[in-house]
Image 1: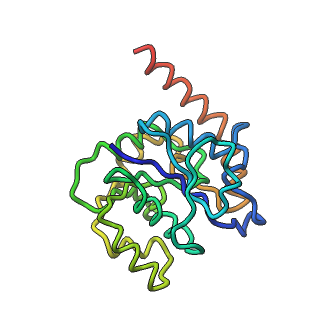
Image 2 (image 1 turned 90 degrees about the horizontal axis):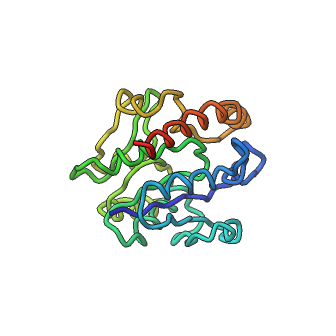
Amino acid sequence: MCTAAILAGGHARRLRNTDKAKLLVGGEAIIKREIRVLHDVVTVPPCIITDNPRRYTETGLTILTDHIPNTGALGGLYTAVVTAPETRVLAVACDMPFLSAPFLRYLLSIETHADAIIPRTEVGYHPLCAVYSHRCEVKIHQALKAGNLVIKNLLNKIDIHEVGPKKIAQYDPFDAILLNINTPHDYEHARSLAPIFDKKTSKNTTAERIS
């Protein structure tokens, strides 16, 4: 069992304070794409963690505000870990249009005593598409109290089960599933990739249903 949480804080300064979750990719808001994928992965609907709950009331999902305000993505992760009824949390950023249900299921299938299961590509770790244990709670809280809000710095304080590039590639033929939207260039890239990715995903989903 696992709880899924979409972390939807932040101000997207490089995108003129646009709400990244509501950017359209493939004709659909990113957050709606994510919700659809997460519904296929976990048995309980995901929650949304944000500093502005009014933004996402139309989703019909449970919306949680940060336990410790103004602490960015790490504060959102802390809220997810503290409030989750399950012992593990699948945490994803709100700006990842190409999340893959098979890949997320794989992450959740890993049996480990590590504090977190985190993908790592050649550019580094992706802590905002990862599985966290409740054991992380104390270390996250310590980082927040110290004002150390850089989520990647947390990784030096916890025990990680790493999912490396070769394993990720098995689920990611377009090098897209861990893409997040930080800049206008990222957004244009996502929009151009969407028709190819969505067509491939649709074919795979149909094949799974037939089989």
